[in-house]
Image (cartoon, rainbow, N blue to C red; front, side, top):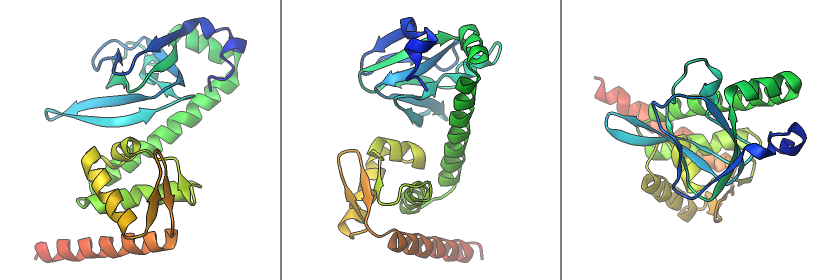
Length: 217
């Protein structure tokens, strides 16, 4: 999305954020959008006194899209988790850019649809009580999305998508690695046997259904 920033004449909107810096806070007026050029940004939301990660975004992704709605406020807090640069664009300026370049708006819509799919995945995982089933569910979704074999998934991203704590994710992934289902890189996961992973997911899901059925008697 942001590779043509110079062509669009918005390179001057570029700002840098150090690791740990806050881009915006939940509840603040939403007047600007952030097009990430380098680095990663994480979104946090507080629920019932607990702060949870609800999104992890990197280069060429949009953050703060609620600014497109008149009078909107931030629904979450955004924080750079590493050295990050982004194009910070006021909503009126962004709308003008979309009018000039309709393909930019189309790419924004595509990203928002993908984000909605991720939200649906998080909600589905949140309803699953077993951490292993949550991790398997997300891994198999990634495979179905065309990631057969090598997946560009960091523990932090997996934590966000499964609605689990980082330590829980690392423990489950380590168990799956030790049992030969997958191999781990620094920021990648290689699925050694997708069919075996699907069988494990089906078995654990069946076990969960049986246990739930017995507990309801």
